[in-house]
Length: 205
Image (tube, rainbow, N blue to C red; front, side, top):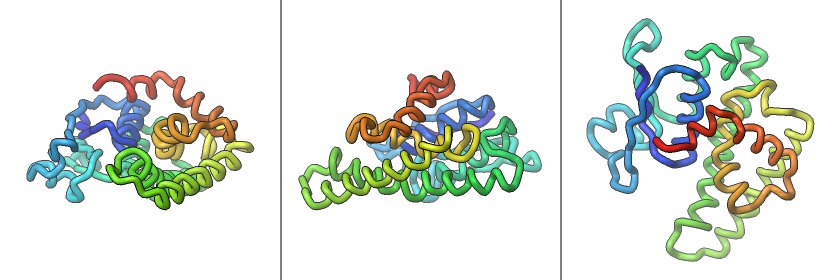
């Protein structure tokens, strides 16, 4: 059975959404980052960069045990292992999914986290940084909105590409910026929010 090391962050929810959507059996191991549990020596063997999420699969490729960190890599792995379309088999379809999976993992979440830091978590008010990252997040939401005007999901059918982007839209787009100026993002967000697997992923753990 898969073991998901999880905490209630945007990247944590990505991995949990991927696990729920995969249909694969898994258990959650909470890693309380507020208590700095991510620095425990045993956990660092699984996630060398002391981040969550992380995944352990005792039945990995070739039947061996594998450990995996980085939310984008975890989503890709779960999608491939599930074989249910979350990560497609066709090479051309994979190219499209990879583009948005990497955008969500490397660009959107990274910058949204900076927005969250300067608008929510930083004890010191830094108006210039708050203004900058608010502008950046609005620009990225505009990019997403333009793409979704002509596409139901980001890369064809619902996939790990959508999962990689959804948590920060949910956390910051809905709650902080608002989606009134981004109707196509709102349509996409609401459709994903209604999925039973997504509701389970954002529920108690």
